[in-house]
Image 1 (cartoon, rainbow, N blue to C red):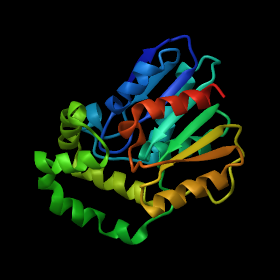
Image 2: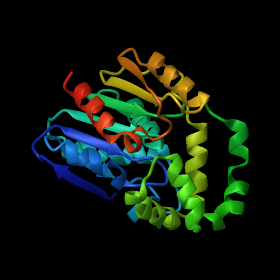
Image 3: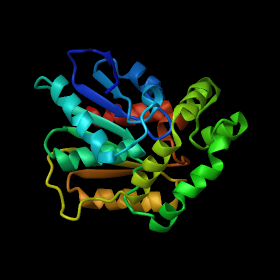
Length: 246
């Protein structure tokens, strides 16, 4: 798999898992801030430099990242920050390896399956595929994630690299993901965050995750939708920093 390493290579591990349709660059302002940590920024299947891949699986991504963590941790504490589908992958890591991670931040993870919407993904993507290369359309999509002009070109280039089959697989995984039926006993401290302006199903998902893990806390971010780290990078960094040092 492809990943970037930055920061203090002797410090605690801090793994950043990006959302769908973007790649590791979304964490640039976090990596610049957390210089005391050994930052690992993997690229998920079918995204960015891996845009040639045609499949996407939350479990396969989780297994890849568990392998990477085990290769790099060397007895150190491991912390993960995941956004959107990266947050779903973080939850899957907690499921597969309950005691691997010291702290996990789950930012905007959907865990309430949307079956009806799921049925329309493939035909919708095939119909709208030509729009992905339209810069004006991409501008609208980027705005919803609070991606500014500084990062738009990276977002646009990542969008046109992704295969339609990857996008369909990713959306199906995203919209069907649910927490395991049996409660996972984990030693991981979990911080769940969601934007006040996110869709109701996202806020309900955040509450469901917080109730699921006995080691969790929930924070609702005022005046923010889907994309806290883009919308308020300084506030996001401060929240994560305070939580890691708690």
